[in-house]
Length: 199
Ligand code: ZN
Image 1 (spheres, rainbow, N blue to C red):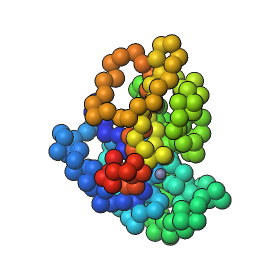
Image 2 (tube, rainbow, N blue to C red):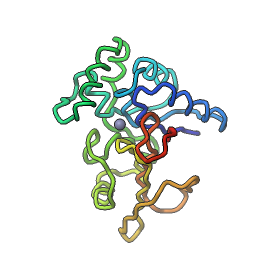
Image 3 (cartoon, helix red, strand yellow):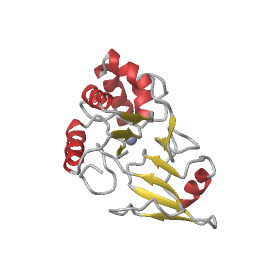
Image 4 (cartoon, rainbow, N blue to C red):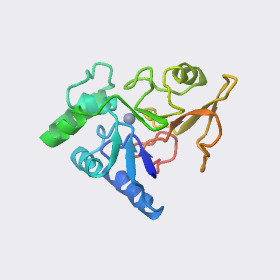
């Protein structure tokens, strides 16, 4: 099975469509796995939810998804994020609310654990250091964990001796070796790695 992994679409329909077009040009995928924050910030929450719903695949909840449907408190959101959440809540339609409220906070698919933030704090933790990654490697059983939330593509590797290293995500990555990995694929709709293109 061939899977495409996307994260942090954030209601950015243009970016999401560009990613889907690119995916098609690369031969398509049987499933799309989405790591949360489908909505929040951008202007097209309904369209993004509907496109994702129509694709076979899997999705987990992000903090913005649950905040927009009132399932999560926005008390610790910055003012812009809180305002965007309120706008998004009004723009969503009943079928979107059903879809977003049914999203689980984590999922297991074959040898992959899917979460928005981290296995330790599925909706909130930013995994940006080897210290945070090492703590999280102990908290999931699959070989690989796919994360989003920080909007920064990053790769953490745990070798057989327990050493944890952080890398940039390479253009191509072999999963054949025995190492365990935490992989952040970056953000579709709001990249924060200095490259304005969808990640
Ligand atoms: Zn996000």
